[in-house]
Structure formats: C-alpha cells, structure tokens
Length: 428
Image (cartoon, rainbow, N blue to C red; front, side, top):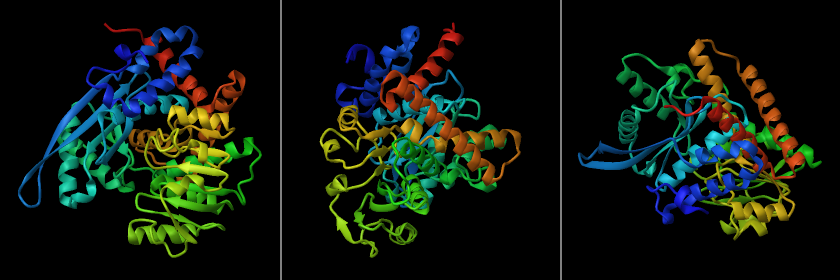
C-alpha cells in the first residue's frame, strides 16, 4: 500500500481499520478500470470529513461530551446518502469506510446518490430516552451545515431507528424554518416515511440470496441458514428465508448464539428477542453455542448481518457454507475473501446484498419530493426488480472478466462514479 497517498494524514497508520479494507478493494479493481484509472485517487479520498463535538446535559445535571462524525465520500452522482450509527466503537476510519461503501453501493444499483455516513461514539444503552433525544438533536445541529435534501440525506443504521430520524428531521426543519421531510429517510410513516422501508434491507438480502442460490443450483426450501446479527437486517432476512421453506439453524447476536438442527422457530425467536433483548436463553433452541462455534455450523447460506470485519483470515477456513450473503457492511476482510474464493464459496458482497435499504430510501426521498406515496406492494415489486437486475448484471460481469462478485460490483460502481467525475471535470 502506498501509504503516502492512501492514508489521509488525519488517520494514523494504527487507525487504518476498515478504511484499509476498502482501499485494498479499490486497488483490486483498479487494473480493470482502463482509461478511468487516472481518476482512481478520487475513490481513495473522502470529499469532506466533519468531526463534531456533541455536548449534552445529562438527567443528573452533569455535562457529557460525545464525538460525532459525518463523512461525505463522493457526491459526483448526486447528494450524499448513508446512515448514522450510535455505537461505543465508532471510529473515523469506520465511518470513512462505510461512506465509501455507500458510494459504491449506490452506483452499483444505479441509485442517483453519492456516499456518506455518520456516527457518534456512544453506547446508547447508557442514555435515557431524553438524553438520547438531546444528543441526536445536538448532533443534527452540528452537522446541519453539510446535510440537506439536495446535499446529504442521513438514514438509520446500527442503534438508530425511525424515532432518531424523526428527531433529526425536526431539528433540521426548525433550524431551516420550514418542514423538510426529505432531509432524512427511514422516518415514521406519519412523517413522510415509506411503506416497506423498515424491512427493505432484509428483503433485499433475501431477494439477492435467492438469485445467488439459483445460480449455483441450491433450492431454498430445505436450505440451512446461519445468521449473525438478529436486528433489522438479520431478523427480516431470516424470517423471509424461513417463510420460503429454508431452515434457520443458527442465530447469533451481541449476547448469545442459539442452534437447532431442524431449524429455529423464527417468529417465536423474534418475540423472545423483543421481550428479552437478545437470543440468549431462547427456550426453543436445541443448544446455546459458544460465540466462536458459530463459524463451524454446517449450513448452505451464512448471513453476516452484524458489524464489519467479522469473517477474517482466522475463521474463513472454518466456514461450512456454499454462499456468504453479506447483510452487514464490510463483514469480510480482503484476506478472508481470498480464502473463501479458493474454497469455492460464493461471496455475495454487501454493496449488492444489502442495497435494499438505500433503494427504498431512494423511493422514500422521491415520494417526499412529489408528496405522492406508493403502496407497499408497488415498493416491494420495484425493490425486487431492481435488486435482481443489479445482481444479475454484476454476475455477468464477474463471469465475463473471471473475477469475484465483489470485484465485479466495485467495477460497476467505480466506473459509474468515475465516468461522472470525468464528465463533470474539475472546478475551478
């Protein structure tokens, strides 16, 4: 790695983290970019990085400061788009990488957005609802100088939800002096949210997973599924696979891992998680596994739908799946990618597999601008068609160029972004 060019000076080499994975992915696709490769440095540098102080008054009267970020990686194809996460391990490297993956994802599925991402380093479980609201509003005010319905549109991510988006939309609107529903997506339906948005990422994972299974001759009925992360993405995709006749044999979340040889009752598991906050101790499981043993589960499709850098060179050789379906962003490191490829395991990359969320966010944004809302059936049909088309076009390129699905998706994404960059030129 050419450290002089590829690590921004505000990241020390020890902080390279997920950004390093992203840079390696860009380097792998560069040889296929042809004449556009003269612009490739564009992909290695975020357009804008904002680090903000987020002070709030706690319920007990003390003042606490949190560190917040909003990174706009690229806006050549349209306004920035990407989630906001509240997590105790949020770093600048992570937010930069997530914003860059959003650039690739939006271009790969041909949604007219650039890539952005935000986050606050906080464990939201340590805050009351009032403190959470004050922190969200202060953060929104601090990043308000760079967000907007035509500039950069946040959305929910890890530990953020419809309520978070309602607070963000209200704060931005109050500061602007007029209601601006289109400044965020993933809002409550009553505030201009879209039907089908909450399930969209998980639904997209299922749609793309079914297409991928079809390409290798794997029937979904009876297929064994292992899911890491049982939130909005993992939970919804597990439910859809189960409804299609698959057996969800293992589920892991932040607090536990449950297993059942003949398939877990996904609906009962979701009800249990709602009541207890985790899958740990679920009575309908055959066994409570250790965290590490999850990687040894015999399955057909493994869905990592938690955080980045979960499948690494230390566990990739143990995975017993035919397909890895990336529900999370960046769950597989480049070295693990190579191991899985050599073992003949098909990896369906995040930038295609989990693009359902941003696709329906795009539908929501369009509906907000026109103040005309579609039915849930229309949304799901459009989502399914768009995801299938995106997956199949990437698959054809992968077969044609004899590269992995990830390299093919990055090739499609980078080509679209760099063509826009070239056509727009440099100003001034």
